[in-house]
Image (tube, rainbow, N blue to C red; front, side):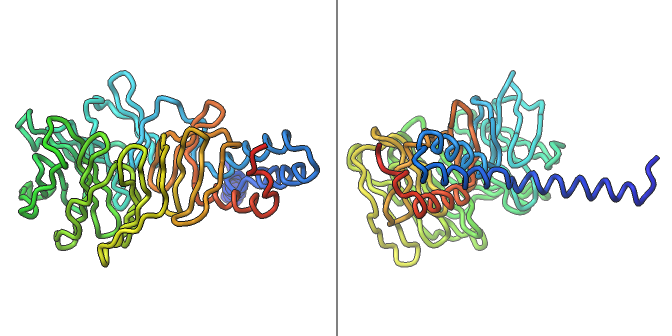
Length: 349
């Protein structure tokens, strides 16, 4: 048995070592070494050193399996008809992959899973808190669900419903419907919670309506903003989204206060795009680019990265055949550093 002082020493040593590893000073040194090599004219070696270590330095999770799925709140796998969550919490479950509606509640560390009819709620350790059925109508299943405090808010047949987890009472919220732009048999619905607001997007294949409600008093703040992609960024005051038609897309900024639109960037070619708090990463036939909202773009083709999804404000990047969950604010801080110290790095060679 270790005595108490010795236990405390080893515990302190472990915590200090773990903190040292997480800070990754070695990666910072390698990035600085890459800048030095580039200035010395050893561009190929420098490029490899910079791209590898900037990706690693800014990653929250690396070497992710290619079969990973993601939504705005979690990374997960569906293997052998079972569900495993790997970020931001780690849970292995015996729940069938038919529970395809998933959402993580970061405020109370809970996970909601729904197969369109049945709902399961887990705690952060994967223990079942609750299980119940909500929609006996197989033809009109639940399309999206999210936990808000002690209630489950869900979407069915164009309407929003609130189910109290304690009293098991359910009621329809508002009298308005939140239908997609066109009446069709298949469409998707996503929820995005930002502070006291909930964004609702409904539609399919480049045609969607985006609406916003206040979840404190359940009033409608925005109804049926026409957008061309499920991907957007909402900070509570502004919505950044894609508008327009194929070959004539626009990055558009919408003000929640005065309901005015402002077109920021034109795209005649757009393969993929991801939004985060500071700007966008997007791919076109010529490569991959970063742009701050309403600022100049920077070509990142030399990083040899591909977009592979998003979780919260982090973007999943494919790099050297592996997936990385990248803190984009950290990543972009190094892009700014390179732009200041070796601006030639971003020029086509």
